[in-house]
Image (tube, rainbow, N blue to C red):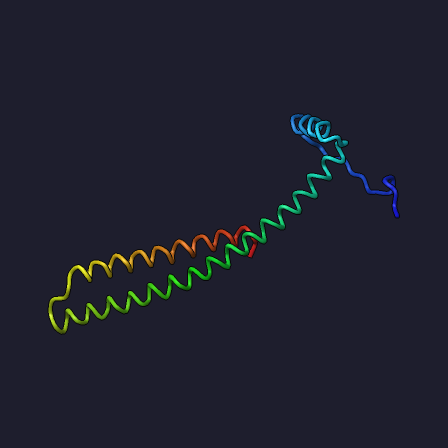
Length: 128
């Protein structure tokens, strides 16, 4: 087992306001400045892992939602095409139904775009 004196040392430059804050926090927490720095490094690494786990879960949820939104958008696209073909072949259709289809299709496409955008941001943060 190594003693504290065997641990590697290094010097860093730190702005005076951060050093003062470290000293104040170390006193308040009953630690040395080194102890306070080490505690923050350990907590930071732990928080990074938890954040990455959370973001991966969010990405999985978004991927599931994205597939559903894509399926819905495709279903609505086909239904709109059928309505268009009906107009061409048989004349007028129910305008209210057509309007609802157009709006629903637009919303589905917006959801797809939103989920894709959110997924890209999460993956960028995760470095994936």
